[in-house]
Image (tube, rainbow, N blue to C red; front, side):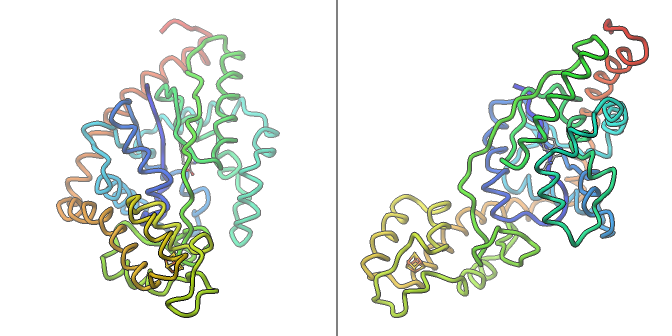
Length: 328
Ligand code: TRP
Ligand code: SF4
């Protein structure tokens, strides 16, 4: 199955990104034809005021992917802005997308609310799902792995595809299906959503010392005062980390011993740090061996492959739009 998914290059990846998205990508690359790309134009839709160095951020993002286990031999990795067909198709799709679809988009409304401190009442932000549609249909994606918040975007993509087919009378695109990634959301170390901007994240690039320094000060069951007090792991975020990352035996042990008051939070956190490091250590090692030139060469090869496919799609699209013809 052809799968397409993208990530915006806005900074280092953390455990939340890994469990929410990357882990799934890594599993998918083995039995599907995956295209993963750096959505750098999309990053500008919310961050155009921030003078981000998207070239460096894009390279670092791909480095994080590969360090985490994405294999460029299995998946095609590329950069959105290197394939100009995304912009070309975006222009055409904008012509046929009713504003109402975009204005009613619940994710759009949520984000406007959440990012009130930013000026994102822009054409680019409103039409974000149109660009996303172009990303997906350029490569004939049958499925798109996404989180819950992206569901409305995929629905819009499907509607745009149907409208295009109806208006131009050619079935040039594949209607993409959503592939929902169900993951236990890993909270940040302060209990809020894990995010770089809240300063509560464990990054995939953190050293063991950094992991421990963050975990050491994390809040636990606040009712538990003395080491021998029985605790309640269900209200403790360290236990969320155990459930997401530790082996079953460790999770069971922590669950039982916390309730019995026979394990201290310090020791429990040490076990948690071990589980995190077990995941991160192979990533650190792979990252050591990745230099910028290697990443750039991988992306360059991916861009070339993506350009060929995108150009073939645009030939059909342009024939449909400019010649009202379906045979290419
Ligand atoms: N909107 C996606 C997100 O924020 C990123 C993205 C851009 C994407 N284009 C895409 C995801 C195409 C899947 C397919 O997570
Ligand atoms: Fe949380 Fe572990 Fe302490 Fe229980 S023992 S309160 S799970 S840190």
